[in-house]
Length: 283
Ligand SMILES: [Zn+2]
Ligand SMILES: [Zn+2]
Image (cartoon, rainbow, N blue to C red; front, side, top):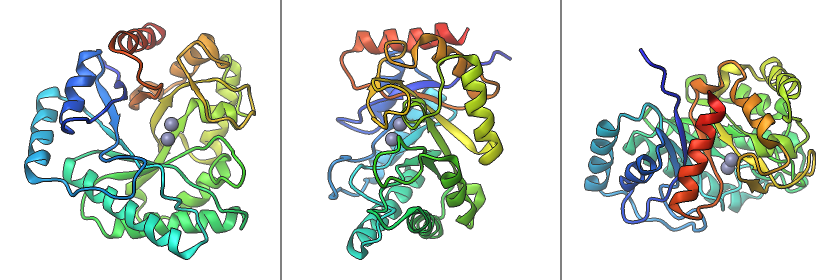
């Protein structure tokens, strides 16, 4: 049996969600991440039955083992403010249901800001939101907590915070972690060479547990180590560099997870090149 890594990128669903499969395959990807709705709006339309069946059909044909959805940007699941909490939780509840319907394996969420109320408040609010959303859905989609870059008041830049949220989720089978290399680097975890990657990932294993890692966002970083800047750069062209990205890809077990590139779309050729470059770094 040949081992085909799940390598993909964030793709658009413009036109219809099932077109994500075509867009991914066109550039040589074997997985993808999508937004199932406009990430910059609260409003959304329910999924139609036909859209769902076309999506599931297409997936069977494509044979993608795992696919990923990303939560819209507006919700703040850590928020201590009642009205924000309510609308953010509603948004997560609905997103998990959309993933269930489409058969999407993983829903990546940002952990949000505690708005100055402290990490403990944020951690507890996020866990509460996850518990509510999981209880309200009968599907199999797992919520993945994405490690953050460490902007002011944000939750989830430290592994202990991620662990704290995981520990408070009742159904452990439906929660996991997504690590973003740019966020890691920006929040102060060095990844520029093999030794640095080993140190960072071994620490993650100690504090959170490597088996909790389900998806890797592979991005280089525009900002330097510890800059707390969430600015993605093309692979090999940022402050992490090729050597670092290659080291991360070769950390044991990484390639068993979907690896998703999140650089902003420029054109088809650039996407093809990025996927090819990562494939080269993998070998
Ligand atoms: Zn993200
Ligand atoms: Zn990311």
